[in-house]
Image (cartoon, rainbow, N blue to C red):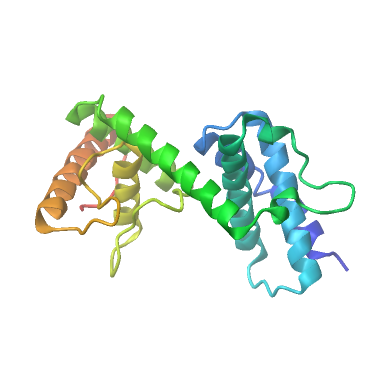
Length: 223
C-alpha cells in the first residue's frame, strides 16, 4: 500500500511540480531553494502521517505545506542570513524550527510580514497611477491564469464576493496601492472603499485594454 508521503512525493513530481518553484519565486527566494521547500513539505507530510492526522484532500494539504515551508524559509533568512545553511532535519530527526518557542515563531512571522509590507509600500510610492494599475493587472493574471496563491496576509473580500474580486484585491495588494486597505488595526471607512473601487476600476481597464489587443476576454473583478 502506497503511503501518504509517497503519494505526496508523486504529486509534487507530477501535476504539482510547479508549486515549490512558484512559492519561492513569489517570495523572492533563489530558485534553487525549490528543492529544499519540496523536501521540507514532504517531511511535514510524513510527520502528519505518523501522527495520524486526517487528510481529506492530499493534494490541497500538500500544496498548503509547500507554501508554509517557503514562508518559514523566508522567515529564517530574515532572522539570520545564514539560516538557509541549516539542514531541514538533523541526524536525530528533529526539525530545528521545532526547538523555537511560540514567541520566537511569532516574532519571525511578524518580521517577515513587516519587511514585505514595508517593501511593497516603498515601491508603491515610486509608481504613478497608471503603473500601479499595470502592476496590479500583472498580479491578477498571476493569480487567475497561473494559479499563484496570494500571501496569507493579502486582504480578501468577505461575504458573497467571487474569485474575480479576490484576484482584483490581490492585484492592488501586490502593486502596493496605498490607502486601499486598513493598516495597523485601522478601520475601513467609506472613503477607503471608494478609493479601492477606483483603483480596481483602473486596474480592470488596463486588463480589458490589453486583453482586447490580443483578442481575449479579461476578468479581474469590479471592486
